[in-house]
Image (tube, rainbow, N blue to C red):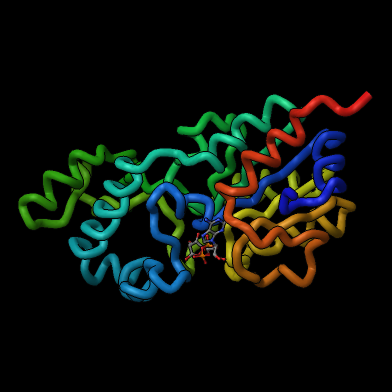
Length: 252
Ligand code: APR
């Protein structure tokens, strides 16, 4: 007995536009720690010490080193069955947009073609002053020497291309995500605790505009009470069978 309803399958199979909002939970099965689970990143590190501009300027080597560690985890990780199922699902739906809070680039590596990275991409770095892209090897070399990584062009500090607490999300990404949510026939919220805004508002925006909203998460979240369907399972358990159900030819 699948964990999801026939209604969800029918709504997906007949949808023109689908949005899938994802969070750290979809990458958990790739071995990448989430933020707020019991063994999550924020259990071990204080975001106020690492994921904001003041902390970075106060100790650039520490922050550059932490993001390098997380970048290496991401580069060693592989997309999992949930990422791949979303990429497959694109072939059965006219327009499927993945709006991710994750910075691990695993949706793109899995083959999803329309991905909005709300919080940036940890494999990219840039100079804080001239904003030129910076090679990861420049960061790695500086860390190996025990000095802050600096731009070869203007000597500015190099930072990861991720959104830190207190920073604005990329306006173009927010615009694309908001428009997609307003137009969606179905929105799936997968592997997010739905406590960080503006991402957490997207399921409610979609629902206000008529979308059917389902959540895939073994735990309850900030939006569980509001969604049309809450599937209390892991992404890796649900998305492959949901893809199969949507792809299965309808009974004549
Ligand atoms: N499948 C689906 N969901 C899962 C799985 C899984 N295998 N494992 C864990 N989860 C769920 C947890 O129950 C939790 O609700 O994933 C969610 C992860 O929540 P968070 O750790 O808060 O991650 P996220 O929602 O992505 O955080 C949002 O907060 O710190 C910032 O910028 C950071 O993008 C991040 C944002």
